[in-house]
Length: 252
Image: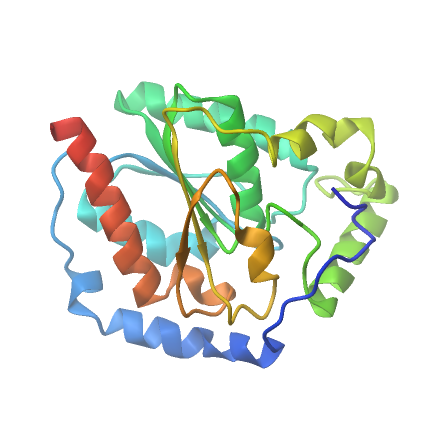
């Protein structure tokens, strides 16, 4: 993994495509299948992990839909996703295990962008508690294969972390010992019993879509903005299929 200050491959789509977020959300809110989804028996528990510079509230629309379908939904406990990857992964692992114990089922771990990277690292560590990993626009193959504006934000956070500001990653997280395990888990083979799905968009204006193609995962392409993946109707239809298949594993 590159140092957090060294850029990788930039996205091929223009950043202005991210302006679609409002339209994607409006279309979703007008979709009856989103507003009144069919209730699913034995719907799997889901833990949601937000993206870089975002908190749990950024996935509230997705969380509400999952609850209406019948899933027990847990949050990552993240206010601003800027902490050291290893520290955050350890906290998430504890939450995953707690949700699995409380629900009596293996968990679907769903993360967006950097949240997908964190989810991927956690999934590599626990095949007993996690049944399915879903990554939305998560550049696990190149966490810094991002556009200039995002790279600038990464550099700003790293400077704050270098100064000792709490809950901020630092320059050393890119190549130092603190995150060595975390970096290794981004490319480590996943447990055999675990299903992994990488959802990506070639029109993503934030990250390089090629960096999202985890070789351990199924690849699903959608037409979506990066930020809009959590409110895009096409993504929800794919998620419904994945979750229905997961429910069938428990009822069958």
